[in-house]
Image (cartoon, rainbow, N blue to C red; front, side, top):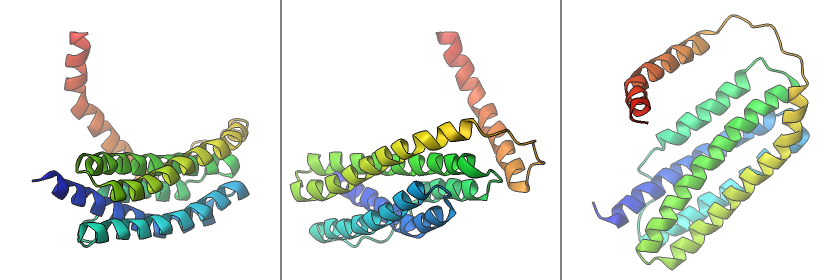
Length: 197
């Protein structure tokens, strides 16, 4: 597969990711308790819509259609955001979970744009690099704003009383089981790495 084909696949992945976020960000904005966080999610929704439009321009430059690939990675990251919205936490602790989910989302996008920019640069596609750099700058800025807004929320959360443990939901039990499976699968590789050190 030629690098241009890989780039097109990656761009379709990013296009799918951004479209999924257009649907997910309003839910985060609605669910957030902190007004600053609500505003950040709403503002980033508008940026995300602009990013989708920029990606359409990239595909026009390449003479390709933007559709044709679903971003499973973003689907998983968005699922983490849904999980955070379903937590029984209250106040700043609840918003702290949303901040974590939002930052994972931003960093997933940042990695995707950096990969696409590197490929487009290698292929000598300066107009596409400029368009993608605009999206990357917005993602970096969004991550920074979330981190800054999150600091006082997390400080407040640190002073909230711990709640008594409740029985795990079916979803939490499944997640805990999968976590143990992940740990068991990784153990042989971790043990061999520890022996080599």
